[in-house]
Amino acid sequence: MSEINVKDKEISVPGETLATGMDILPGIGTYRNGEKIVANRLGLAMIEGRTIKLIPLSGRYIPKTGDTIICKVIDVGFNGWRLDTNSAYSAMLSMKDATSEFIARGANLTQYYDLGDYIVCKIVNVTSQKLIDVTMKGPGLRKLKGGRVIDVNTNKVPRIIGKQGSMVMMIKEAAKCNISVGQNGLIWIYGEPMDELLAIQTIRKIEKESHMSGLTEKIKEYLEENRRKN
Image (cartoon, one colour):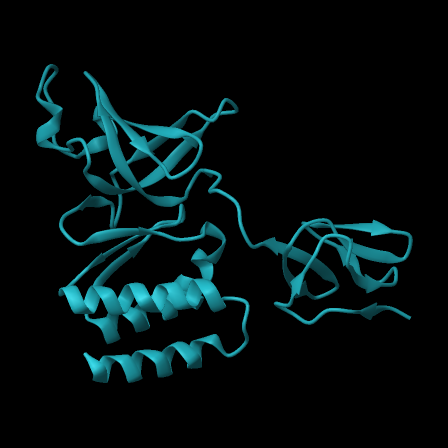
């Protein structure tokens, strides 16, 4: 008879037996050893139907086509911008993908995006050599002005966003801040200084406690309590 030995969203360690039985299938981060399914890394156990997998607790961002990310401009060339993607690989933003405006050859590109600017962009291509192309053409893609940017564990981004954006929306409303979350683990927050601080503290709390059950209610209570203090 098949048996699952861990609870959903429970932390598991390498070598731990997660389940026993041939009815249960090994997913990402696990392997089969006879009738046992064993963890091959530290992570959160996720049970999806008959499959059990592990979501890593740490690790740098790996760029994927279609991801919306927040990047910092690190170089301005003759025909585009090089961007820090908060990963091991930089990205290129070409003139044709930078804006819907026509940019004349030889134009001063810093008037569009300068060194140190942060932008929200979308990955349109990742080659096998990890050359990354991004675009600024699309809903919500823009240069970020003011505010501050923080770095979070990329594996915690889905919890910070929440189902259909519910968690980040709750933080926005309670902290009265504009917030943009990049899938590469960078988050932009803009509001009054004390409101920005509340948003950051809340995001750090989610990052720290993302594996716990009932997290949404805990964050709701935390925001209500700390909103009154401010």
